[in-house]
Amino acid sequence: MIDIAGFALAVLLVELTPGPNMAWLVTLTLSEGRRAGLGAITGIALGLAANAALSVLAASLILAQDGGLAQGVSVLAAAMMTWLAWEAWRGSGESSPAATPRQSGQRHALAGFVINLLNPKAALFFITVMPQFIPDGRPSFVQGLAMAATSVIIATSIHLALVLGAERVRGVLMAESRARIVRRVLAIAMLGVAAWFLAKAFA
Image 1 (cartoon, one colour):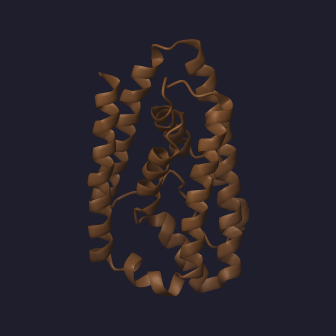
Image 2: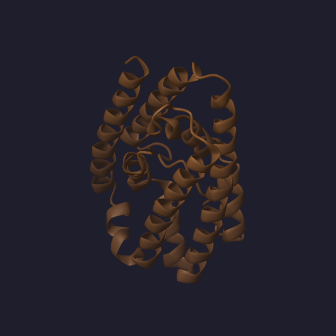
């Protein structure tokens, strides 16, 4: 049985981490209005969905060939979460797998779609982390799509909350001291998930 709750928690930890992705949506909404922000969200969601579907297809095909790959993927998943935790702790990069553009002159929906579709970090996240929440570590395409949909829904919900509450969350995201505390708390939680993946690999 798929551990949707566990996967959703892992996605939530990553998506809640303050970074350029959040700041871009808030700044865009405040400067150009909610319509621009919602347009960007639409592109981001479609790009994430397409990226996730392709990643799920790749993971299901690769892992179906050899069950022994599951251990290696677990180690890679642990490394992936550790990397995201390190970026969140430093605050010097986008911790979210869905990095978005910051050039406001671009057509926001198209830019959000293209950048998320071609984002290798998003693909690596799905390919390595998703199988950790499947009993045998070998997800079928249907199982993968269910988890991909869960991830996109969580990301889009957070993005909508940012755009609709841009004025209120600006103080948190733009105040580096507060954002640093949030990032570091979430980074520690991500390390906990990474440790679980590593333990699972050698269990």
